[in-house]
Length: 300
Ligand SMILES: NC(=O)c1ccc[n+]([C@@H]2O[C@H](COP(=O)([O-])OP(=O)(O)OC[C@H]3O[C@@H](n4cnc5c(N)ncnc54)[C@H](OP(=O)(O)O)[C@@H]3O)[C@@H](O)[C@H]2O)c1
Image (cartoon, rainbow, N blue to C red; front, side):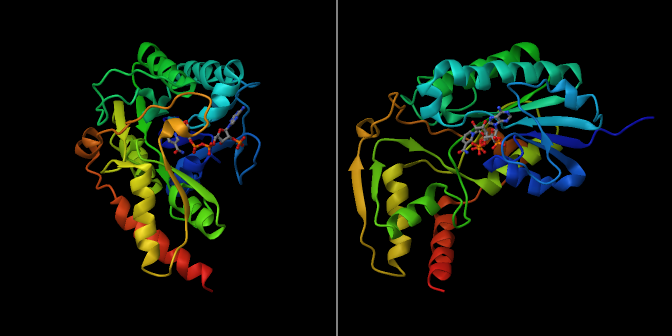
């Protein structure tokens, strides 16, 4: 039987990005795995104790696999390096080996943290130079993939934000902190270009549908410091109500973190937009809509 390979396997299908990616594809075109938090029609997969081949041998219409699982918190990666290496390096290498064996094209979700932040505005040709444990783990997998796979996609993703109240991403989190009168630390010297979750999903889907290969930066159109992003949110909020905020303007180096953070990890997304023709959302427009929706819901 000549079976058409038209499904995408989402490894870490209940992750923040995975949940949205699965919604985009729906169950006709995607299969998803979960680990500790079950999801409807999800396949249980613990990458630390299972081989992916166990799953792959039973499903043979998969063309691509998006690797989203792992320890995604730079702080916990640095807290126990051996433990996070097991999950973020060893287990992912084994997943890549299994995908190779079954002829499934891997898509690895890397990060802007692969750069040291000295230059900013990085493109795909710039050499990587990670300074955080989490970034070094990402680079090790990027290199492994380039060495071991004939065909692959590496997406380096900037900080992802959503627009759903309570989703605990950049703007919605700040709005919750403002209404809870919490202290908010905002770095004036940490720059990146956050990307809207819908743009991440459409980019990954676009790269799959156009059968692209190689490294792509998935980042918002414009770079901002954390402080600029917070001020953007504040300006929109003040249009609706007077706001009293407990903001502490600081350097990223003043925030007590386990490892020294890179400063300017902004990236260019021209290769992505030129290749798949995606029009990325404007962060300011999305921020404005988030505030409008937040005020509407909270005033009910
Ligand atoms: N979110 C961002 O801003 C951002 C930015 C740049 C790059 N990325 C990259 O994009 C990917 C997804 O990020 P995310 O924020 O969406 O992830 P996330 O919400 O933190 O989810 C992490 C995923 O890892 C799974 N997982 C943890 N331990 C596992 C194990 N032992 N076996 C199998 N699965 C396990 C979790 O499953 P359970 O919950 O079921 O345990 C969950 O699905 C990651 O590679 C991340 O580095 C994310």
